[in-house]
Length: 120
Image (cartoon, rainbow, N blue to C red; front, side, top):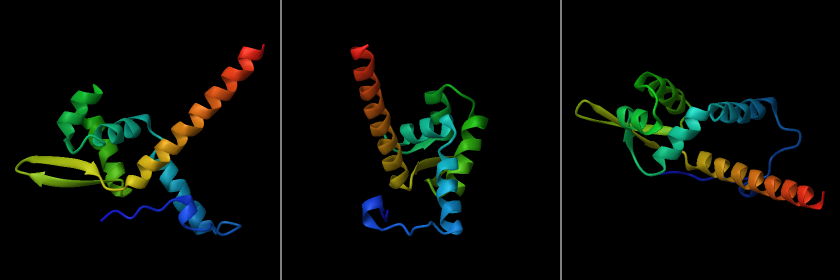
């Protein structure tokens, strides 16, 4: 079962305790690699093997494995073995919600900048 927590579901303490700051930082670090975002984007469609992800992302299996290991250790993805193949899927949907929130912010910023440029 996936438990989704959003900012409006809980009140953050002020100031943030150092332990919570470390946990938040770890989540952002997990998403700080473009390949990891690309992997998660592919996994939104469903489970994929390392080989399938490597092909879809046009990168090496070694590179995909390295990033999947970090995503797995961070609780972002799960894995299951079927024969000799391991399939990965998203286990923490809140990471995708974070990505969507960032995309919304980027879109808003682009709109604001476009309005400024249009006035020049």
